[in-house]
Amino acid sequence: MTQRNAIIIGASSGIGRELAKVLAENGYGVGLVARREPLLASLAREISTPAFIQTIDVADPETAIPRLRELVARMGDVELFILNSGTGHLNDTLDWEPERETIAVNVAGFTALTGVAVAHLTARGSGHIVGISSIAALRGGRSAPAYNASKAFMSSYLQGLRQKFTKARLPIVVTDIQPGFVDTPMAKGDGQFWVASAEVAAQQIFTAIRKRKSHAYVTRRWRLIAWVLKLLPDALYNRM
Image 1 (tube, rainbow, N blue to C red):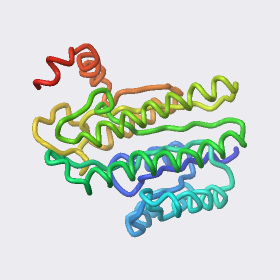
Image 2: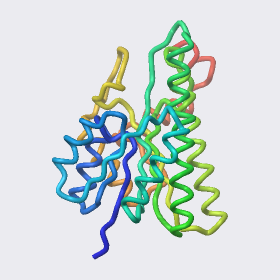
Image 3: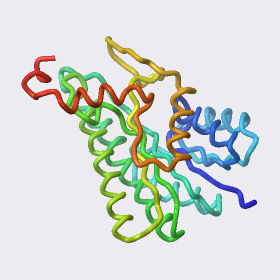
């Protein structure tokens, strides 16, 4: 059987780390991408299938793009790309640096590395792109405006790719994952509820990948919150 390969961008901790384990358990060779090489090396030792490490700073597209291409070349063939790297800050005072960092990673970095995935899978003729967005993509947020906006960008960009591949009649699946609260360092602020472990989130994401879904909330109960957010009038939402 031909080895199936996947690349996880943002694999050093949290959802990405658990996804790498789940993919390996299901027979995938995994490309592990993040800034922190020691964490990637530790993860690679826990995986029984082939593991390839590549340190990449997503916030620096000029170096990130060629380094991701290099990883793809080393792996030989990649059918699944998971764009999981992201950042966000509570920023009531709208200081520029937290906003800049969020945009650099979640918008510019995401777009740059997704472009590498698109080029590879288009040449390959098939494959799967998964973006880990957020329930925050559905509405703006006063405490973290750049974060919510960046996740809305991700979800809209993924929808555009889906339309692009459908128009071109290319069998490339695009999956938008919108998690609620997950127990990782990214989960910030008060009032968190329905908090899932990274392990549970990873299992549900893999189910969505296996079923080749175009969209999934994680955990699944967050579809109820999404329904409320979509229907809530602006006048009421803005007072929350």
